[in-house]
Image (cartoon, rainbow over all chains, first blue to last red):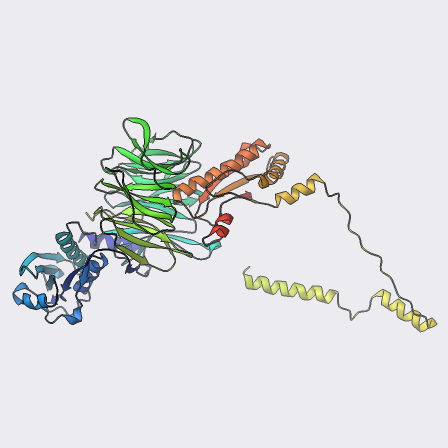
Length: 428
Length: 177
């Protein structure tokens, strides 16, 4: 119900229909697990136009970890475990079977029931029923994908999360910029902001309700805050010079930003309730792109105080001299913590150009994940396993994801320039 | 006015210019020539005097400055905000103009190429704008005349990757207000 409410409000200020992002899987060194998702049996519901099984299949395939067994080759269509003949599925090489049904519940709501079966153990792994509103079937499908993914991989699924991104279209002298939000699978893109001046650096609040971003006003970048559900925008900073790189604190009460009104770009914290400003860096070099550690006690940021851009870390309370974290390659920039605090995603510049890399916070080991040459804006999914980023080509940029454990990559294609993805937190 | 209207107007203007120089109406010189032939059997022809422009001395500082001031873009090397020597005379000329015209206002728009992260590039664009601002202040412009803004990599002059495009995008645009 919560989801439906949010969408209705969103559509009130963004009614235009945009093309979905097209997904292609490109990388990976893991053997995908064969899984059969049997079409869900609809109980006297001719009007169900959401293919729950197809959505689950697409979600699981998109992760690169599963190989859905083709629907047309399924020799039976069981809707419950009692109808399943495990030996038949075993003969087809299928390791897991997903099946279920949709039936009417009270007050126009529906009930989606599903089971995950282990073919080799001949037993049920999962069984749930999910109540949904008439328009919530798609989200219930993603919820099922999340439950299956978590059970079989040990990581939380992110199929019900969303991504924000910026598009740029039109000729150079007449560009239109849009801040968009879509489901994590690229479905249902909605416009949050449109401008004829550049839009940059979208950043979600930890509760997913607010979006901070940078927009130009009178040729000067300013930081704005938008309430996602209502679309209401307010200007947060209006200092002379740069107002940029907003990033929320884990408790949602502060925003780390870059301001240059005192002479050159420095990191500041803004208390969102009082508006109070606290300066965090003091260096004549460029200091920018700050991000909080998940415990809220430290900030990492990009600085070229040693010549080239590198990642530094400072203690918010203790002050003291910032510690340099990166030494490999030509430069490292725009780092952010994984929500579990174990990794930093960053843009690593080496011979191959600009590539997405992760640094193990404990060992400081750097692992390059993308091919370059012009990859940027990495953003962790809330499960700390997948990173979304933008890959610039000769004429435009597109979004891609990479899993840090398997290296599996996905491209999300759309016409025009798509950049600066920001993955939402988990739905609350 | 849209482009089509502009094109139509241009065509009309060209037609007017063509009418003005049409040879169907003989000019005074030709009439004199004809009458001379008719009266005496002699053929006379007119000789037009040459037209000369007013010569300006090549080393006129004002002319040189005006030419220099037509250069409204300062280009930079990769990840650098150092003003290249070739642009110092250009900044000299702009600074002299600003010194002589205290009411003139100049906006310095810093830009970067597409390499590097976006927010860092905003900072780099500002650093380039500041470098031009400092150079102009040193040469006699005043603070109130200059405003630095930065677009980073967000407003490239040309699209595409490779040094040819990047070199044109790493720039500060001088925009008189």
